[in-house]
Length: 346
Image (cartoon, rainbow, N blue to C red; front, side):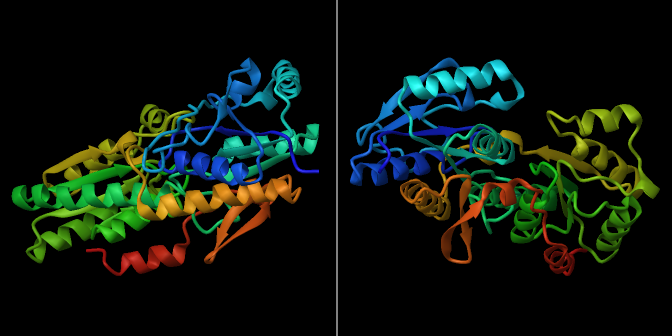
């Protein structure tokens, strides 16, 4: 039998394209005349019972909007048995037959647990600007973030060139270097530092000094927030290491890296930390289309009973992959890509 009511929630950090997924899922479910219920503020809404019916009017004009009309949170109900009981109660109270979970690794992992350990019929949609979910070639939000960072690099080029400086640009990337790698190459960065390959500060300074000796009086260094110095050349103090690689909030490697560059080269160095601007604003055309295709696929997976699965992009097709596969490990930047990027270093 077809489901009588589908729920949808968006969890974790906000991301361009979330509203496109919601819109697509609602429009696809309307074709089957299946009501859809929006769960407010991620998993928190299933714990507190905050929901709203989603209609054609609800999703009117949201395709191009950033953020999520449903709100979001980082609550994980599987960490608290009282929360599980509340989820069960509200699930039955609102008459849910199935749930679309749109989120990154943490949100999808919670969805996997609720399906595998408690029997909730759940399908996932991968969302993160970091592009670190396994089983899918790209996640929506990544293309938008890369475009934003690339534009920032383009703008910072002019300041770096005018003042003969090194500009260090710190970008997001929790444990992976996808944004740094792609945006750095697209923006013509002279050095790109990512978590997948610990860097030697001596090599960084050597490249920058060589550029200066060749008459290149400015340089652009893009560094992912979780990039680490090589253990043999670790310049971070214990306090700095604790601050930079804080589990809940990464950030700060750009400042200490700039200090070491200036110390090692004598070249004036400035830092720009792009921060949350990378995941804000309107999604690119690519992300709008990808998010829409994933939203439609999620509803069709429910219609076919494909629970415990995630909608994913593989090649040019949207397919269904196991949530267990998608959350088993982070998808890291391919070092072959980094070797290509290194052709343009210096």
